[in-house]
Image (cartoon, rainbow, N blue to C red; front, side):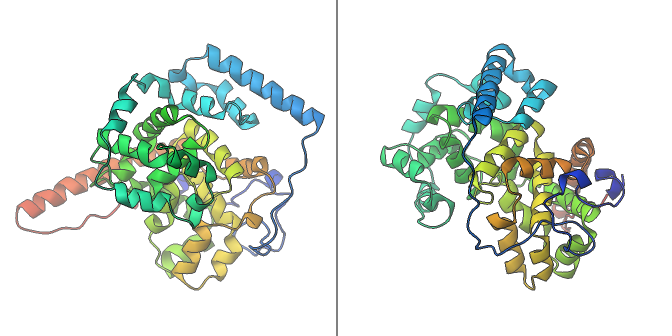
Length: 372
């Protein structure tokens, strides 16, 4: 399957009707939003009008009705649910919606979380505590998580419980970021079972020893970038020689926690929990578009990665809904991504087995991701 199957013929990243806020002078080879100073003051969000408040209440009622009548196991197959997700998820029901999308309650076994917590510390507990207690970065701004920690619970306790149950997981900073985001919305035990479901359904291979899943998904992102913005792809992947995994690992392994502002992040999760990995790739392509001008002007790998992993808020669309429309308009065929993913996984698995056989025979071999 050719690279174009992921996004059709080479064409602008964004459909025209989604780009009214994009500056005209962004240069050739792709579209990008305006890029004022990254230190510009945050946008002022206007107070909700009575009409907006009424719409919010109506969405809340629709969600409560749906959550009480639909089966969580079928949630990701329901077009009605996806339409409601696009319309918006009130913060008052968001963790319940996430639990529904992940079918978290189906995994819940009463008393298990308490028993796992009683097992106490794990080999990486000290490292987790340093990450979670950092005064800088994402955790430094999360006062709510500090209160939970002071009460004896929170991120470290939940992750220790998980790692006591699944000890083969390789710890990275992405794990406490994901857990922290869940704890900002959900009670601790509910967050635990939602986390287990997210891991099992979507991203556990990213943290498994010997897995190449992150490399596969990063390669799929690189292909999609080549289709959507050849100039940026050439700059990053060819001219600067940056590995796709260096770009994607901080994004995908944290589900963009610490990368996007809170109100944009929760809308990302709303759709990711329905669409899966292809939506992570879409978001990455959107971020490239948001900071395109700066990326093309960068002269070092360090500068490129810094702006990709922490894009200035002033470069984002003016509202989370504008952002979501932008992400949705990215030219990417989700079904083709899923098919390519399965194909590449099988090819990498065969290469791994062949490499092990050669090493067993006294020779060495390297494994490379297939280009097609």
